[in-house]
Image 1 (cartoon, one colour):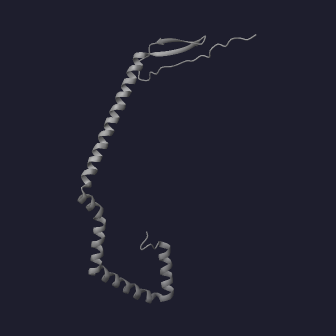
Image 2 (image 1 turned 60 degrees about the horizontal axis):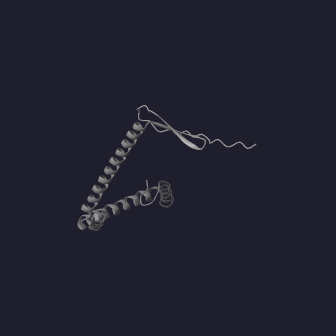
Image 3 (image 1 turned 30 degrees about the vertical axis):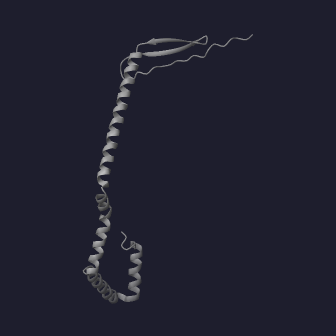
Length: 146
């Protein structure tokens, strides 16, 4: 809780100093006088002007956007971004479906290196969605040097 950038500890310190300088009766008179001044200031035309200017300053960004026509442009940009996002998601889903379908059709492929030449063997893959080709590599045989 900060009022006029005065925290609770500073406020307590101010009250203690006031109590020491003014005494209990002086504090009551001073607090009553400060309250009267604040009430008069809040009810003054100058305070109403300050509130009016404050309201105008808070509404200024919205008014500028509305007056310059940026509101329509921002809406159009959001619509284009949403459409691009939807298209991208659809393209990713289509690509995933094509990959899944091609994996199901291709089955499992094993690559065995025998004498430096690859030998391929294929076996069917169970359709379950987690089919992925497995590649098993064997180290080529090295010639034995005696």
